[in-house]
Amino acid sequence: MIFVIGDIHGMYDPLKVAVDYIYQVATKSDKVNQVIFLGDYIDCGPSSKQVIDLILQVRQDFPTVTLLGNHEEMLLSYYHKVFEFTKIGNLWLNFNGGVQTILSFYPQSVLFKAQEFPDEKAVSELLHLDNVLKLDEIYLKFFENLSVSHIEKLQSPNGEIELLFSHSAFSNRYSLEKQLAVSNWKDLPHFLTEINMDIEESNIWNRQLLNEPLRDNMILIHGHTPTRFYKQITKLLRFWEDEENAPFVARDRKTKQVMQIDIDTGLVYGGSLTMLAIDDSPDAVNLFPYYISIEPKKGFRSKLYHKKMLDLS
Ligand SMILES: [Mn+2]
Image 1 (tube, rainbow, N blue to C red):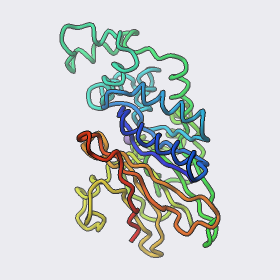
Image 2 (cartoon, rainbow, N blue to C red; image 1 turned 30 degrees about the vertical axis):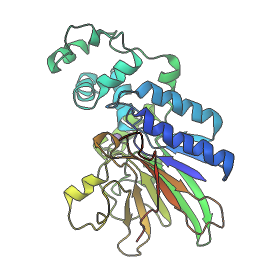
Image 3 (cartoon, rainbow, N blue to C red; image 1 turned 60 degrees about the vertical axis):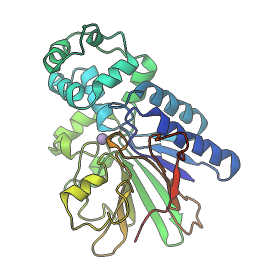
């Protein structure tokens, strides 16, 4: 079994439920062959550091892939003062929940020395100081070494299937091979310059849906855009008949093959955390047997998670 976990954004409790489920599966029934995290571990929620600590623990116990999200990209760009860091810093701290991440990793930051919580202007001025954020080496290495994409090749009764994992969607407009060649955060500036791509189109920021499959028998699995967002941009899509916090499944118009699955179900926007189960055994009848949906706790009687069927119709 492969487990894929969508956008977490500093929300430790739902992640703990997902991780406990994985340990339970590993001790009771199936073999856990891979755990894949799709990025956006930090920002907005209160527990970014605890989230990373839990991911580091999972990494010790299971083969694990950790992908780079745009929020980790913002943190690194700010931390290393690159990519016009002031702009990125403002964007990160003022609009993307970066302050919560600093509070979690570095509560002694000068950001919190002021009597009142700093407003936008004060944050901008503080950006130039060195003691806003300091990260321990273990966390800095974790962020710097996050992968930009990952491929799993599976044998199925219908032939080989490639699963491509990424924080957000790849683009049909650029060479797939070049997009796949980016290994980590440090490769990004060179890659963007080389193919003249705006970072908004890269597979850590892009919000465009695929026009067609990236290659035959390849399914892209990603997060980044809360699935309910698609409902707002078009009413023509039919995926919203049941519930808003379900993964989003897109098929090729011509062949009707599944080509894209988005599992960011908007945890920090009042949605849920989604963990997709993938049956990677060669005789798997159903590649996507179920997903786990975890809503932030509503009361002590509420169930911790719900096991649901992925609607592939
Ligand atoms: Mn994102």
